[in-house]
Length: 78
Image 1 (cartoon, one colour):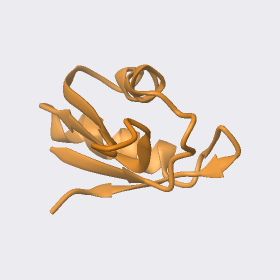
Image 2 (tube, rainbow, N blue to C red; image 1 turned 180 degrees about the horizontal axis):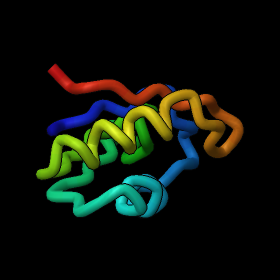
Image 3 (cartoon, helix red, strand yellow; image 1 turned 135 degrees about the vertical axis):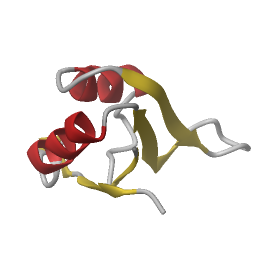
């Protein structure tokens, strides 16, 4: 299942995102979207987890969690 994480602080790193989600299971991919010109975070990321149950648990647990002073939103990517 592919998840979309939005409202990330510009200071949140891909490593931090990976660590948050790996507590719920194996991650197949983690991608923090960066601006091509500046190299800075655009404030959203994608995480892919092979196990849908683990992904659903992560989504429910992490949705609206406060990370680096920003309340993140986690939902299924379409």
